[in-house]
Image (cartoon, rainbow, N blue to C red; front, side, top):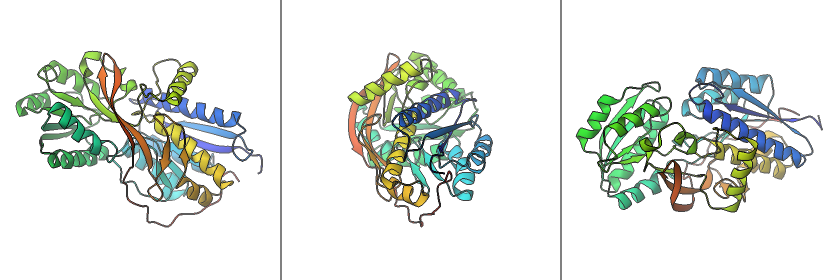
Length: 379
């Protein structure tokens, strides 16, 4: 129908351990959709946002994803934080319903599907420039890798190992724990015994708060150890006492200290619309969700169509001149975006940018499967 709404589906962890992230993601989606509608919608049609709570549970995410494509008939699905959640969404949305899916979180890379586009950073944009910089600046040579036991930490740690070794360093420990594990005292002792210069953390909520507390209480940072976490952002800083993460290094596509005028204006507007603890941040996928919606809207506008093959073809090279952290552009064929990247350090409860890395390509492999075609779900 010519004037029927364009249905946009967003899956967010509104409850469960990642609820502070999910609330921010839902806020971003509401803000962008409202802005698009204020500008006349897309192709003269209003957008209707459908937000579903995945409850930080992959089984729930799959059920809600199926509802979005089968009942709500959305044209696009966005969302998911954990890589396991991406896979849970992918099943009903991409594999079964053949619907476009945009994944907004920083992750381990290697997702390659004609109907999936990723708008957060990957290892070539985080690990590859960050670890050599850290080793040069701090002198760290030996690394310990405490990790949650799922796909993102395993793949990311393999990349960390390669980069550390290539730069003359060593991995002195690598351990994996269930996501809900909370007692890390034995591992913290092993970290101390190893003499590790740096801890590269991929433990995630709810375990990350007790781990950082136990590592801090061991005196790791007081001894000069370097704490690293590439997903940590201002939302996560709110979860822990300042002292537990003082000096922590990270590398993301956006921090609230990003200096460009657009980023500052965007943050001020978000804070005015959504005051509270659910902050607009990078590691929580807010930046990726914002640019994902904007890139998709740019693709629909260029295609002058909601037919899926037309939107996918335009999204393959879509770009936005302004966004959180700076401009962004899909690298043709890769379904991942070129992004400005920043190295930051936690100081006094805030992240300060210590190195602007500029735009970095994702260096993901070209999607080689044929593009699956389909008409708009809402046509």
